[in-house]
Length: 167
Image 1: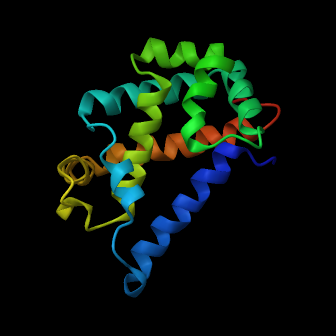
Image 2 (image 1 turned 90 degrees about the vertical axis):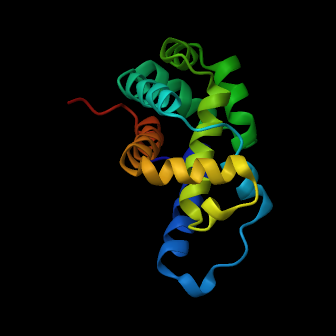
C-alpha cells in the first residue's frame, strides 16, 4: 500500500493520541497550536452530520478517492493546504463536500478540532472558550466523533489503495 500525505500527517496524530492516553506521566502543558486547532471551528451536531455525509459519499466514489490519492502524493501537501487543494484539484471530491453542505476548509477544521480535543483530557479546562466548548462537545458525542475520525482515517486508507476494493 502506498503512503499518502493525508496518512502521513494523520498517523502521527493518532500515535500522539495513543501516547497521551496510555502514558500519563508524559503529559505536559497542551501546546498552543493544539488549542488553536481545537477551537478553530465550533463543533456542532450539524457539522458532524455534514462531515459524516461527506466521508460516506467520498468513500463510495472511486474517482473521488483517486483524486484524493493524487493530492496525497504531493510532497508539498500540508494539513493547512489540504482544503485548498481539494477545492482546486479535486472536482469530484469537492462536489461531495458541496453536496454534504460543508466546505473542504470547514471539514479540515472539524477533523483537526476533533483530533486536538481527543489528544488532551485537559482541553475542557482550557482558557480558550472555543477549545473548551469543543472538548466538552466531543466528550458528549464521543461515539459519533470517533466514527467520523475513523471514517476519515479509512478514507486515507482507501485513497491509497489501487484499485479500490469492491464489496
